[in-house]
Image (cartoon, rainbow, N blue to C red):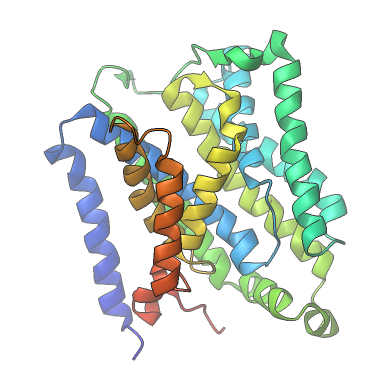
Amino acid sequence: MPLRPNAKNLGLAALIVVGLIVPLVVEDTYTRHLFIIAFIYAVVASSWDLSLGYAGIFNFGHVAFFGIGVYATGLTAKLLGIDPWLAMLIGGIAASAAAALVALPVVRLQGVYVVLVTFAFAQLVLQVVISQSVVTGGTQGLIRVPTIELFGYNFLRDYKFGYYYVAFAMMLIAVSCLRWIARSDFGLSILAMRDNEDYAASRGIPVAMQRLKVLVLSAFFAGVAGGFFVIYLRVASPEVFSFSTSSLILSMVLVGGTSTIYGPALAALALTFVSEGLANFEGLAEGRFILVAVAMIVVLIFFPKGLASALPKGWTKPATG
């Protein structure tokens, strides 16, 4: 029986209240740091779900949009002196522009060809970042990126208290927007496109245009998350394009459950703590991604549709009109 809207809203409200209380009861800065990173990954994973889960586009270059957001924000804030809040928005716009560029060949390709093109795009961006070391810092990274300020409030000396709430708000806004997009007429059209492209085209859905739109939209949120990532850490490193980062975030999408938005966000919280927690144990740091992969396999055996399938249907069921 579908969850009643009131019960669903109460459940979401309870999660939000818990999120607001966490930094008041958790004073350990490292734990707060893990929450902040988890919130950032939640935005990237849930935005990836929009193109991968809802639209069925096997886009394996999504982390490149995250990385573009990182560097676009870092460079504009540090080299051009643009306010970091605005620079994060520029990071999202830059990621969307890159998505529009990569969409040109992708919108007319299918299957493994989409994987190859998007993966090659991610590697191309990485090589550009490394080769242009005079501007990007190359393998050494971009350091001392300016951070955010709010009415004179110092985010650097409050033990990550302020950063936590900014990251939490960013996640709530992003997930809410992505969920709204997924439940809109546009969301229904990309679901139809994913399930039967020929039928969708016969019903008047412009398949190529819808693919372009979904890639641009999903990239924007990933780019903004990348912007906050570099503003928070104050360092931009080529590691954001690494296969380990990509595989970790993809694991969040699959473990959480595709075509749900909520699922990848929740899985991001769990897997971030598991992954980083294992890194603190001697002998497990190098093999933590293997253990995460094993955990992913176990979850998918018992929950083939991801952890979101354990939630009441009303939480994840797409709108019908």
